[in-house]
Structure formats: structure tokens, C-alpha cells
Length: 313
Length: 313
Image (cartoon, rainbow over all chains, first blue to last red; front, top):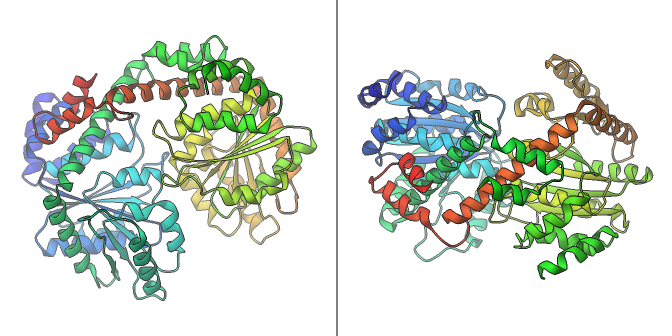
């Protein structure tokens, strides 16, 4: 593929051709040299999609919830893309295949696009790939992008930082109260959902969560995250989640929070791209290797890491 | 504290003064401006300690195993430092306090030093802090440094990369076989330990693990990771683990693997220090802010992230 072919591929993707969308995403995943070209072609079409992060520990019913959310959003006329990211899987690219199959209700719907990504690639990992894939999905015309991550570790928090609104899923019977406090999910959720609400203990999880959220200090005019209950397998409560997300989106626009989040994300992306380019020049990505000599010198005791870093700069 | 006081503090730490060791570690954690000075003072004394990574999911008995390993290493005359790192905890600095208390058998032993770290700090996070703390512990004369991490996510794999030898702990009844394959632990362990060997299912976990490790392709002359069984709470099997670690250390020296690992770690550290310095200059760490204008321009659609990254460079 040549640089000249990029605008036409973007055009076909914007007309709704799923295969072209898939090819654009693959250009990002394959770290194509055409990405600067592609980015220029996409940028004028971006800024429309709402990016909704969806996170929660394994077993809370994330795939079922995604499936149910897609259904509700489609009923309201939204085109929906799902980007499922697994940062805990540095070695494998296929861990989420099962999820894609479970979200199969919508496989034949042309208004739905589903893609899984693992933390592969030579460049900056998911911090490098995720914003670029989100830009593709935004530019080709999806109204809502569901960004699904596994768990709530440090990498997941970084991925969640790419979303406009973040839904944190919990379920009864998983010791979630303590886990929640420990892993910092009280600081990342805009909407909390206790799934499997038909099971024993769901009310207690919701109550504990509300009281923990109530204890957190919030600035005046800040968003107060609601705690909702769903049974995603039957669809109960899912419309309320979509309503809460619409309210959060309106609040983000009115409060100036949306602009602030976008500026922060642009900063992070510029920085990631610049650092990746530098690492390429230094030789930790790609072929040259100016770092190797310095590292040998450090191990030999001829210099120290701080002095070597200064030499490199 | 002044730069002139650094060598004397290093000297006291090397004479075995635990408070001085603690102060040196704090200089790293507090991102002291004296770190280049300190690094120069430490480097001539490094290269002696064996760094042993210890990782495993919550519940496998990591603290009990650490405690038992300390005991066995002390019986053999080694001075032992423990650095317990929790990368999954970006928001809190105190998550590991409980572990320190559980390792309390050795709190009064001057040949043992125990320290916990969470992923706090403004600079490069654990990738920035961990190698510098390891250098302190090496230089002040510990023979073995146990680097304990929680779980096996991407951040944990990075921390494990700081070790010369990595022990992966498992336990029966945790669905570990599948988890192991998924999270890539088959690629990071030098010694596998099935703890709680007195419980039902331990033999099956060990057998499954051996067969999965047997399936992995290894180059000729490569290290074949042993699968051992322990009951850390009674000490059963712990001496075998220490023997296996000694064998791995000997193999590393003879095969040239030790030098290769040290060069790789030096590369990574130089790169991390250089990138952190650049981020400081760009304004994502510290006070100035050249990135802010570029990010606003990207959000306004006046430029794109690739072009902005080039401008920054």
C-alpha cells in the first residue's frame, strides 16, 4: 500500500465498509510507516465519538455487559465500536478471542465493529496503539466506542485514561469492596455498575460502594458517580447505565471537562510518539544501537547510568 | 543533606548500619537531586549481590515463602535484603505493610533488611526506582536480594526483569495451570515452586506445570527450570529451592547469561534515566510546559500528534 492510497481507504471506511475499517486498524497494529499520513487524513473527521471505558475484574460479566450495552445503544440508533484491550497479556495476541465469540449477538450487524488487542508490538505498547486505534474508530463515524479492559492494574488505569467516561463493573461474591479500595477504582469510575444484581450480596456491594464513594472528597460542581445495578444476561438495568453515560457526557461538555480530558490525552499521545521516535534513534527500537556500548561501559564500571544517560542526550 | 555527605553515608551503610541503608533507599524513593552523586559513590561497590525475583498471585503464600527463604539463606551465612514491590497499586504507598509484619521473624536480625515500595513518585515509576534501590542494596553488601512482586501482569514482568533469577510461586486450587499459560509465567520463571504442597492437588499442579514447561522449546544448553514443591509454613522443601537458586546462579555465570542480563538492565536503566530527563525538560514532569501548547493545537485541529511530536523533538 502507498501513501497515495490512504485517503481513498479512509473514504471507504467512512462510507461504512467494515473491511476498510479493519484494514485501517491493522495499519496501526502493524506499526505501518504510513501512520503519519493516515493520522493527517483522519484528524479532520475526529471529535464526534464518545469513548466509554469499561473495566472490571475477570468474572464480573464484562463481555455480557458489553453485549447488552451494544444492544441498548443500537436500539437508540448509535453506531458502536468495541475495542477490547488486554494489557496483562504481553506474550499472546489471542487472549480475547473468546470474548469476541461471546459478543456474537452483534457480529452480523453492520452498525457494530468489534476488535481485540493485546499488548504486542515493538513501539510504545498500548499507550502507543490505543489512541491511534480510537482515532480511526472516531473518524470513520462510530457514535460510541466501548473501550473494554481487563482488571484494574496500573496498565488498565492508563488505558482507562483514554476514555471520556469510565464504567467500573463489579459483582457480588468477589470481595470487591476491599479490592475496590486497594486498586484505586474509586478514583477512575464515572459510573459504577454492580452486575449479577439477582445474586445474593449485590445490595451489600452497592451499599458499600456508595458509602466509600460518599467518603471521597469531591470539588464543588464535580460529577457524583452513580452506583447502578444490572443483570446484564437478561438486560435488566442496562438502559439506566446508558442514560447515566449520556448524563455524564452532557456534564463533561458543560463543565469543560471534555476539553480538559482531550488536551490531556493529546499531551500524552504527543509525548508517547516523541519518546518512541527517540528510542528508535537510540536503538532500543529498530536497528541501530548507540545504547549497547554505553550499557557495556556501565557494566564494566567505566561509567555510571546517570553519566551514560547524559552522554546519550 | 549535601553532596559532600553522600560518601560518608554510603560508608556507614556499608559498615552495616541499617538506618543508613534506609536513608539511602529513601534518597531514591524521594527522587533526591543527589542521586547522580550517590550513584557514582555506589557503582564501585556493586556486582556482588544475587538478585532473586519472587512472584506469584495473591494467596500462593508469597510472604510465608519469603520468610522461609530468608531463614534458609541466613543459616547458610548470607546477608539478605527484601524489596517488596506492588506495581498494581498506583495510588497507595502502604499496601505491603501487612507483608512486612508477616515477615517479622527476621525484624531484629541485623543481617536482614526489609523494604516495601509502591508505584508512587513523579518520575519513571518502578522502572526508574527499582534498579536504583537494587544498586543501593547491592553496594552496601547484601549477598542476596529478594525482589518480591505481586502477580504476573505486564508491570510485574518488567520488575521481574530486574532479577538475575526468578522464582515463580504457585499453589494448588487456584486454577493456576490455565492462568500460568495465559499470563506468560512459563517464560519468566527460572525456578518454579508449588507451595502448600501438603494440600490436595499440589501434585497435579506440579505435573501440569512440568508438562507445559516440557512443551516449550529451549535452545541447546539452555537452563531447564526445575519444578519444586514446598510447604513454606513448615519449611519443607525450602532448602531445595535455595539449592536450585545456587545452581541457576552458577549456570548464569558459566553460560555468560549473567553478563548479558546485566548489560540488558544497564541499557534499560540508561534509557529510563534519559527519557525521564527529557520528559522533565518537555514539562510532563516538573514545572515548565512546552507540551501544553502543542496539545491545545492538536485538540483545536491545527496540527496532528505526529507533527506535534516532530516539533517537540
